Length: 133
Image (cartoon, rainbow, N blue to C red; front, side, top):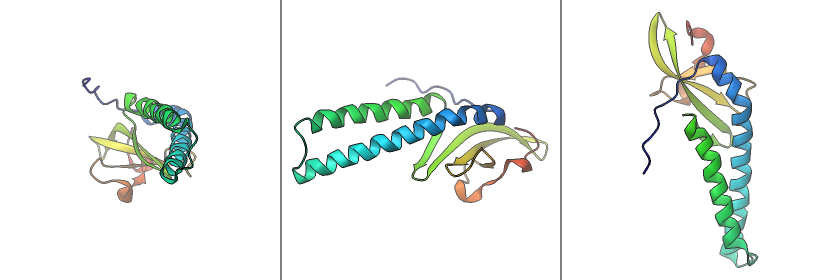
């Protein structure tokens, strides 16, 4: 097992800059998972083409590769449908440095919310409430 890379912490502008590629990667994973589910259903019902097992293996490898893109950047995939990502950041809140997760959901144009690492989606607050990110 490879050692886990230290977590990257982003400034808000850095997280915004990586968001377009993150959106593409999430869409890619969702499409691959959909194709994989279709193949698995065909295998279960006996209607799969002869190449289904090999094709499923290729799809699984592609999903792993796409997920590794997020892992390499310390970006957490919380959900694929709807797409929900958490991006680790250091911020200043009430004059004190804090660790936060910048939170993006697929229907949002940009990263506009954050939450504490322990809090989760339900505790999101606007990034405008932070002194600095």
